[in-house]
Length: 255
Ligand SMILES: NC(=O)c1ccc[n+]([C@@H]2O[C@H](COP(=O)([O-])OP(=O)(O)OC[C@H]3O[C@@H](n4cnc5c(N)ncnc54)[C@H](O)[C@@H]3O)[C@@H](O)[C@H]2O)c1
Image 1 (cartoon, rainbow, N blue to C red):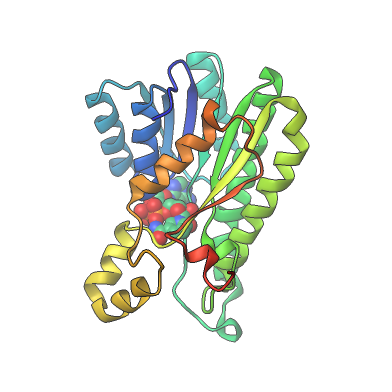
Image 2 (image 1 turned 135 degrees about the vertical axis):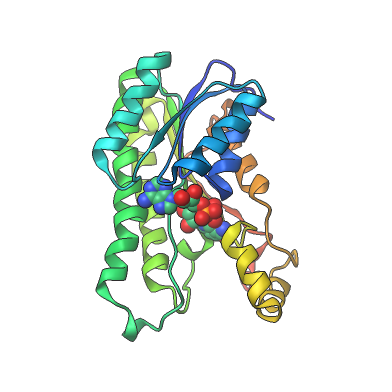
């Protein structure tokens, strides 16, 4: 585990799944974290787990697509601890599978509002602060869906391609200024939605995971380990990387 002692960070969508795992991991590595989620109780539970383990944490409840909240969350970390060194922009939503021709524009807008404009807003204010410092590392949660086509999931798929695009553009714009920007691209990860799917449709779930080269979904901690590493000094020469954390899914058919 990299050493993040003395580092200050923010994590969005930290009330459950990958975001909670990431918040716990950054704190375990020694970082002080401001965490946010739209759901107050799960967020408080994440904070409780961090405090119980001896970590320093502050919470903010709100919508990660709100640019004012993004600005004030960055300001909160800086006011409390003096800098913003690491950021994990993780909050995102998916959609029910629907053929392209039956997609509703309102669904596209809902998905883009959070996944694209939310991520963009957080990056903008994180980068402004990191630029003042001349240092910092950002990791966005993208998806393998942002590298491939995903039948039935067009709004989600396009939103994650957008996340990958803004990750690489920001990486190039800030490469000379001491700031690194990367993304994790999770494959199927065993969070609440996947657990529900396994429960309700065990045969489909089995069929899906058996097509993954490693024959299983990821655990959230496997995503969090990658996110912490990308923000650590050990990854000091890594920027603009869209890191598959997907059990080999990304290289299927590409040999
Ligand atoms: N689980 C997977 O298989 C998988 C695969 C690829 C990518 N991802 C990505 O990982 C990220 C996290 O997903 P997860 O599986 O951990 O989901 P999750 O549902 O377990 O957690 C998402 C968290 O985000 C919060 N949230 C939702 N809308 C929000 C908003 N508007 N503002 C702030 N918080 C909000 C939820 O309350 C929840 O705590 C997402 O960006 C998702 O697209 C997940």
